[in-house]
Amino acid sequence: MLTALAGGVGAAKFLSGLVAVVDPASVTAIVNTADDDEFHGLRISPDLDSVTYTLAGAQNVAQGWGLAGETFATMDALDRYGVPTWFRLGDRDIATHLFRTQALAAGAPLSEVTARIAAAWGLATRLLPVTDDPLATRITVRRADGREETLRMQEWFVKERSESPVVAVGFAGAETATPGPGVLEAIAGAETVIVCPSNPVISIGPILAVPGVREALVARRDRVVGVSPIIAGAPVKGPADRLMDPLGIEVSCVGVARAYADFCSTLVIDSRDASRVAEVEAAGVRAVVADTLMTDSRIAAALARETLASVA
Ligand code: GDP
Image (cartoon, rainbow, N blue to C red; front, side, top):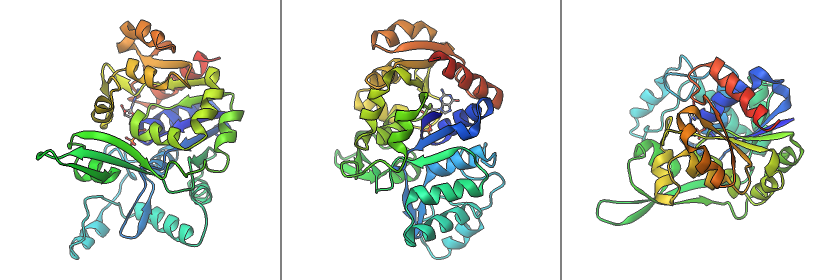
C-alpha cells in the first residue's frame, strides 16, 4: 500500500506516473479540498477533479485544468444573465459538479461522493478527500492603498490571477475539521507516504492543517518522501512562489525541505538543483537527485520509480 498527499495538476501528473509502475489499486491519494468553492450553486472540488480526470486520461493538458475537448456553451449562455463567469466551468465538467452537488445535498459525505465519481471514471486508485468537513483557504492580500483584504482562494488565484501581493494564508475550518474516513489509516498503514509535487502552501498546507494529519506523518517520518515542486528556484507552474516568499519560505528545494523536515525524511530534488544537496541535508532531510520535470508520461513514471527507490 502506498499513500500520496496530493494537490491538483502537479500531483496528478506524478500519480499517473506512479500508477504506471505499481498496481493502481495499491495507491491511496489523500487530496486537498481547501480549494473547493461554490459557483452557480454547484460544489466545485478542483484538486479532486484534476486527479480524477488525469488518472482517467481525460484531462485537458493544454489548458491545465478540466476535461480534454471541452466546450463552454453553458458559461457563454450564463453571460446573458450578467452573473460572474470568471471561474470557467466546461459543459461536460458541469456534469461532475451537478452530480457532486446533488449527492451532497442528499446527505452523502464528500468522501462517498468522491468514491462514486472515481468509480464512474474507472479508477482503481482510491481518492480520499482530506476531510469531509468544510475547509477553505483564505488569502489575505494588500491593496495598493495599503489596506488588507481577505479573499477566497479562487478569487485570488483565478479572478485576480495570483497578482495581488499576499500577506497571510489561513485555512478556515481547519481547527474543527476531522480527517476523512481512512485518511489517518492510509498514512499509518502505508509502506511509503509520498508528498506529491504540489503547492506547499495551499495544496499540502491545508492537508497538514487538518488536526491529526501532521502528527500521523511525523510518526511515519522515516517512510515519508517528498518531491520538490520547486525547480531551480521557481515553481514549474502556478503561484507557489507568490505564497512561499511572503510566508518566509525560501522559493527553492531547500525551502521545501525546511518546511517539510519535521515529517519528511527524504526529498527528491531536481537535477538542476544538484548543487543544493548539502543545504537540503543541513535541514535534516536526505536529498535524492532526479529528473523531476514531468514533461511526458515516461519521465513521470521514471520519477515515481526513483521516488519509491529513494526510501526502499
Ligand atoms: P494546482 O492546485 O493545480 O496548482 O496543483 P498542485 O498544487 O498539485 O501543483 C502545483 C505545483 O506543482 C506547483 O508548485 C508546480 O511547481 C508543481 N509542478 C507542476 N508540474 C511539475 C513537474 O512536472 N515537476 C515538479 N517537480 N513540480 C511540478
